[in-house]
Length: 165
Image: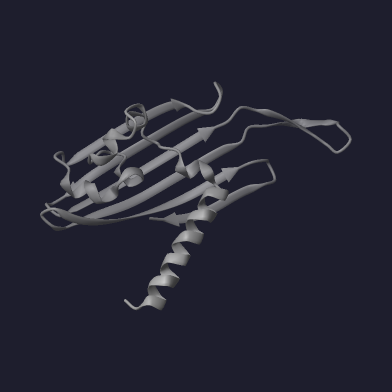
């Protein structure tokens, strides 16, 4: 790899990281309550939430199927983070995972420019993920995760995106 290619790749990754933190920031919230409760210690295990934590660990799983449901209160007492995760080990070298996370926020009142009430709205965030990990050698693996992200900020303003890592 020459210096120009490396510099371009590094700049792209840096810009991507900056943009990621500006919009749809909910995608960085952990779906895995177990991992959050142990300061990330379980992120290095091959679990049902491997798609979000580290998909390349899934081929090293000891179980052929792992399913988890997670619930955490988020932000304030009326925001809820409900997550589902699954990991499937296929043979000795492949692991496939699915994850889904929904955050429902508290309801707020909508007003017009003149201050007239126009109803209520509850913002929500949705993250769906699919990933696969492949064992290359006995102690080396690689993985790819793809996500669909949806953020509803108002009844008229919704964001959709696809992300990968």
